Length: 218
Image (cartoon, rainbow, N blue to C red; front, side, top):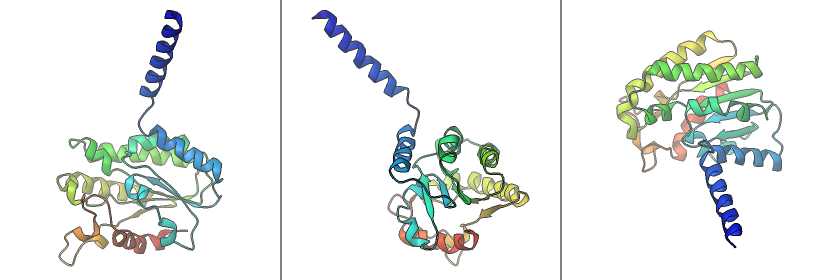
């Protein structure tokens, strides 16, 4: 009896520690893999990669009815996470275009983070994309001004400026600036574009993003 109990305890501890060692967002990546197994991803699609602004855009296909879109946003992700899971986010697909929205959570995770570090994280992920897809279109959507993260905006704004300058020099690459379209006539962010958390967007916010993104989409 003691032997059986010992074995059960060992199995319990083994299961506990195996779960503990799983990195952040591991389950999100497994969910993507399961989705790809159930429905093989189409080739020549537009691949969205990034954080919750993409995750919560669950009906993105209805905003772009003439496009084939694969949404691989996972909420809370940072550019460090995109780099960590780069192979899982890129290898299963043969896209004609990749659009990225990420970086906001990097600053939220560490309010002392410098813009230069976030830019370097983006460049690292961009480099991984180019290793696999040297010639496709790669676009970056600017970090949005979220009212709940107002104090972080100076760093985010600086990162946007540096990433825009980087993308301008790259072939088949664009910086998609959604800042102005989210402002009122006085240049202030429209809070009505956000749900109660003042972080995530309403359908109207996504409609405005769509109006800016369409000219860049293949």
